[in-house]
Length: 131
Length: 121
Image (cartoon, rainbow over all chains, first blue to last red; front, top):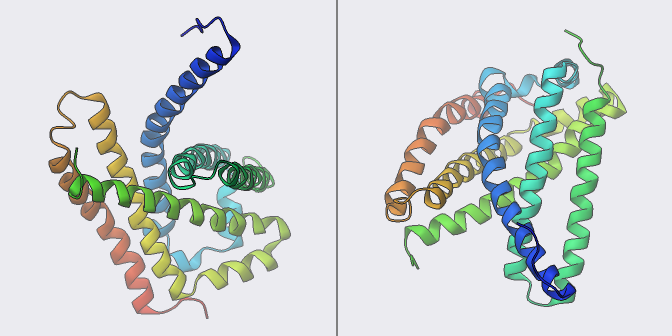
């Protein structure tokens, strides 16, 4: 929806409301997708496979296939975004002091950004298309 | 609206499981990324995580993911249907039915592994 406010402060308020709506929609859509991706992921690694046999070889072999790279990258990106936004809801509810809330968010968002970086780096560190 | 009853429990469990999953994700990504340091480092770390105590943690995590996922679907039904809120309590019991159906294979496989030995060494 276009911003109709004439003053910057009001526009900011309105825009943040829209952003909030997008996050709300995102939580629902990513949630549905993640239910399927994660049940598949857990099933594959702990019901079909013997957990104790999982080692470097197994991980390298699986992550060398483009399909699984994309699958895992989707889990990583959607999971971290879904988790980060959920965490934001929790922090907004639980931390009343504004400056403490701000700095907690700075630290946790940085951690999540770092995890995305680390996770995707390790995904693409393996070759593509090896069977 | 639903203070102190099923809806309240559903909400608390949704938050706790969500936070738990996020904490696990940090450990999980760190563990998998150890592959970048080669097979020795990676295998040592994975062997460490094959100890039974972590597998009990894994069972707890899978329970968290299944609950969070199915309760999330319940939330979506409440948001997008005309009847969802009215039947939120019945839907919550539906969540637990789905939970049991999906959790059993994991419980049997991983639980069997813990009891049967053959891990870590």
